[in-house]
Image 1 (cartoon, rainbow, N blue to C red):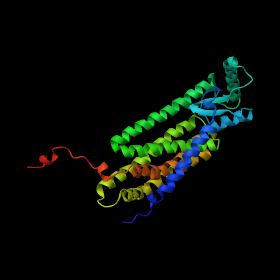
Image 2: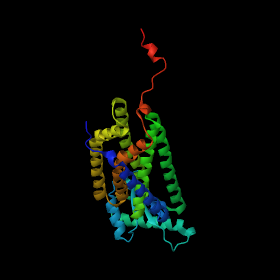
Image 3: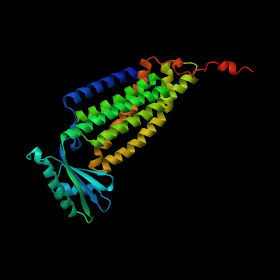
Image 4: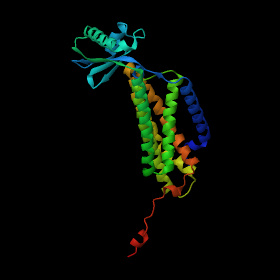
Length: 314
């Protein structure tokens, strides 16, 4: 049966494009770094509780109309709790930032009480130093490395070490290229974006495992054909599932991007990039690595238990 699409026919072109994208991303990250949001830099954090559910866009509008244009509003805990992050006033000495944070909290709470019929309670206001932001970035990066390590162990046990290498290389490719796009286009990187990166790992991994499972099945079932032919067949068999999953996911993400407001835009943008890159890497990066590592039918054969032949003798 002839394959409908010869995916592996352009594997070298796809591999070259990926190498260029990764190199550009690494250079941009090294030279320009990321445009870190207030979650990772110095700022004043104000926590408020409303007596009723909050519409974040209304809070953003109230703050913007009163001069707090750079304020970042996010939900936490419940739909009645919000956290507002404001940039630090550079004219105030570092030693006085904590006292200023308390004053800012009272001012913000009073302002929002005048803008809503709900009862607004100030839960607290704190000065967040750049050191805390650095620790958040460090812990987030460490979390991604730990996740990649656990994934490699899991896929090695579930499939085979060559599949684990393919999956991890694909995931690393997705994260680096996504970060590179944020760096090149100076898109703000905040905690929502960090959460999106972790979600990208999960999404891309799920797609890669589905493809890997079909590759393993075809290697064991098909008696004829080279590894390249079997991988091509597997990619074609999972293509409709991959496209439908990606399309429906993108529909939701674009809805969040256009309707969700400013607080979720970074999250939506990161996931949209991640879904597109993740779908591409599941087809070309993970499969390319398998071919470069010379995967064979013998690698995936079910091991025969010693003495099993004797058990079949009556």
